[in-house]
Structures are given as structure tokens and as C-alpha cells.
Length: 191
Image (tube, rainbow, N blue to C red; front, side, top):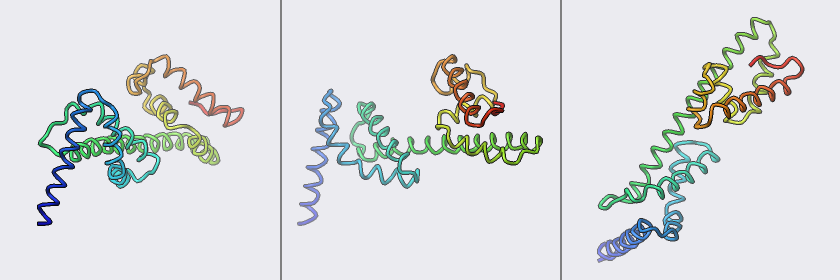
């Protein structure tokens, strides 16, 4: 008897969820708050184990719920809504991990390239200064610097990668360059 009652409560919950999804698909926004509250903790825990960084996980969860809202029209029964949501979470986290790995590799290449130049100049303290300076840059600043200085991308290519105009990429690179020169002292870094 208990299993029948449990299935009945489970069925009622599924019907309620289906009804809220239909309302959202028809343009209402308020029912989505209930869905976010219902799944937010589960998605957070799932993403945290994939990403292993609190701040990145918090941002990812927000992005996932935004993507789910934007694409809720594509959700159809009989598939489980939670499975659909987890698929969005999985794809988003995998993209973040791929991007994080690429950025770490680019940073290693940049440091290696610059370290080789510094070794040629026999200036061992400059390597430590470079690491300190790089750590003071934002993620986007590091990204632009690596694309321009290591990968030798044009401003047009940087603009395409970052979804900004070429002129904006050039201005940002010049600001980064000036920032590094100012923080490194009179001689500056050759970037």
C-alpha cells in the first residue's frame, strides 16, 4: 500500500512540475522561480564536483538556469525534466573545463616562452616578477595577452575569439601593456 501512495504522490509532483513547465513555455516567468528553487541545490552539488571551484560553480549554476529558461520550449515529455536539466549542466561544465584547461596551457606556454627569453638575458628575478604581474591580471586580460603575445593573433582574430570588435581588442591589449609596464617599473615588459 505504501508504494501505491508513494507513486501517487510522485505522480502528483510530476503533474505539478509539468503544469509549471507548460506555464513557462506559454510565457509566464514566476513558475520558473519554483523550478530553480527545487533544483538549484542539486545542480550546484553536481557542478561543484565537476568544477571543484566555488566561484566558478556559482557562476555555472546561474548560467545553466539561464540556458534552461531560454531553451525550455525545447523540453518535451516523456523525458525527465531533471535529466534534461542535468544534460545542460553537464555540457556547460564540460565546456568550462575545456576552456579552463586551454587557458592553463596557454599560460604555461606564455611563461615558458617568456622564461626562455629571460634566461637568455640572465635575469632570474624577472621570472618571479612575471608571475606576480600575471597573477594581478584578470582572466580576460590574461586571455588577450596570451592570444596576442604568445599565439600572435591579430586584433581581428582576438575579436572573433572573444566576441568583441577588433578595435576594442587593440585598446584592451594596449591597456594591459601599459598596466604591465607601470607595474614592472621603468623598463617595462616587452609585450
